[in-house]
Image (tube, rainbow, N blue to C red; front, side, top):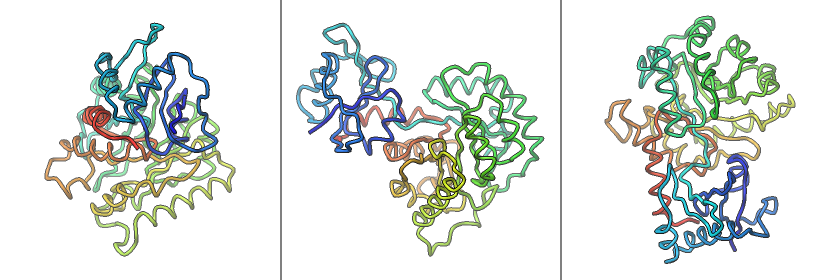
Length: 363
């Protein structure tokens, strides 16, 4: 038996549902998913309004793969990132091509990033790229001013802060319906950011002191801890080939959670990133991505930052900046298994997901 589940925020849906059972539908700014979940903590709708009943019928026709789905789709119209259908009461239902997974769009405000270094290294080009990412549909802008590619030079915290001072006020000025993440592992920079309008501290070292992590949480910021064996990353320093990388990362995640709990840090504001390419070679990275569901833990969200990284060269000879299709296909494969994806570009992912919405038989 399928149940209609209603959510105000996508995060609620991610916490309650493992895997999609229908497309995501929207009605009156609420998200709806048809699920056969038996989780008693999930808030099933027991009494449907007439509009919700029509939404339910559309979703059921999709799951059943019935001929009625053709009728609903034919009567709907294409709008921005969705199919829209007006109900008998004049209200619009959307079968949306949004993702439950939230998307971080990457802004490399650096001269030497591995994939687009120097392209967005002025306020004008950076803001233009931010607007491009927002138009695509990203929900968070992740700003980095220090490259962590292999061979990159480590910059001083004061240099990092000066670079952020050149771009951050411009981005905060246009901030409306998006969030801001700062990619940094320098404690001095984090302390400087605590009183600014920032939503995430993205620590690629995964090693900030727990006291500083607590300060971040108390300042209403989420903390992202990434697993890495070195900063900058090194192709020579990788996990032992004799170890199962998923088991290794599972132990790292469990150790992190225990440490946060010991310090009474609210893990609802903690996000963990297994660090694709930071201590793993190509086959190890593919293995982790293929088994990413084994790294999920209750109460802690998961972010994957795989975009354009070197593991793709295991299957492709494309230049680094031309790997967005491969990055999108990987992302499409793990969309319902992680909470956040960090990408340079999402145009291919949007196309892939909308096609999947029609072609995939839901579970």
